[in-house]
Length: 156
Image 1: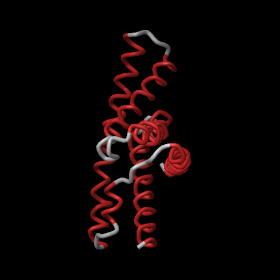
Image 2: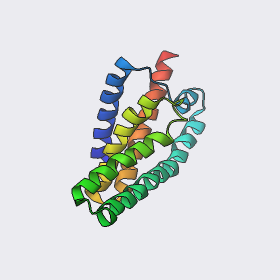
Image 3: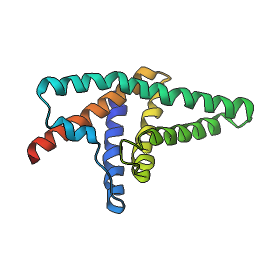
């Protein structure tokens, strides 16, 4: 979990930084509201995101498995090809569900968020354990929330 979270955090910062050189990126509105919350409200926010992030894992892993099965079993594609195509399509789906969060910024959702999803789904692919990918996702997002919270506190 921690290893995949670390890889994802580094990938997110690098891809986000490179992408921001070429395109405007939008802040997550949830991050901005954290700065104005009390410590108990911030704690509740963190805790309430855990089940949501687990849900995002299920939302991604199930289509990944379904697409992979379809490509391998019904389309007779090689196993590795089926995995890679399902991996990429699941990342696109994940990016798409984040479009409203990032004001319909296509580049941000499909390049930055989608690439983060590739790392998180790799955690599932390597371990075949949704708890590992969910744990990595929670560690990743909570780290990003904390950085945003600390940064906004320093800026304000």
